[in-house]
Length: 310
Ligand SMILES: NC(=O)c1ccc[n+]([C@@H]2O[C@H](COP(=O)([O-])OP(=O)(O)OC[C@H]3O[C@@H](n4cnc5c(N)ncnc54)[C@H](OP(=O)(O)O)[C@@H]3O)[C@@H](O)[C@H]2O)c1
Image (cartoon, rainbow, N blue to C red):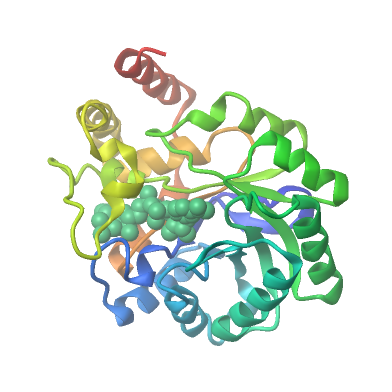
């Protein structure tokens, strides 16, 4: 497993992190709780040391499962959760942050969070107030590092004027590279660590979807990730076929090529990869055991230019 750091915090993290959105049970289809807990444990056994969750994933359910899975090995794990996105909407007021952190600590069965992240911008609260609340939590010892998610440069700049901002968690994968234009360069210049989400394109980059998943019941992924709709879906299939060729040459799963492409980009701390069972968790963690060569990275970039015309 390769290791990096969470920005200026100096906290050491594995290049692959375990994401637990699906484990909330309300967005990626049905889950088996026992399998979810075993998946988190299996990822740790396979070398992962970072787990990411959020209160909004299944209204606390994902955090509860993470808390159960980490019993007895809390100290070995970099535990990341978030605040500011709950059922009624966005709320990053000082009062909401102070209340949410205690609820998360209870569900996670711990007395500290390693990385606490503002989940989405709250247009109704000055970000300076939110950032000060986060800094106060750090002083109290409830959190060790401060992150944001889905923030732009301007909001990050305002946070940095108040105190140390350690990380950004944006959507970033072979299927969504919007942050490459200006957000990632800003993070690199300012020592902000990057945790990519949707690293596997919600499963699209494993090669298993030949037709788009239907938005039905509790499987709503196609409503959040735009590449499940045409014409992006057909373009994604073309890209997956190039990844498949590289995977075959290494005798590795396609998922490894997608995970390694994002995790090998400059400034990355961790590629967050979601899973629902131990087999997926172990397969994903094993991507960190090998690297794509410079020629292979260029081959993928060439395919991106051909398919997306950039
Ligand atoms: N900050 C934010 O706003 C935000 C937004 C999204 C995600 N996140 C974080 O980032 C994490 C990762 O993103 P994500 O979970 O949305 O998407 P992802 O990691 O791209 O895809 C995860 C899904 O792909 C499937 N999968 C995973 N490994 C597989 C394998 N080896 N073979 C076949 N299928 C596999 C699983 O679903 P199936 O088995 O059902 O196909 C899994 O739930 C999340 O869990 C969450 O922690 C944060």
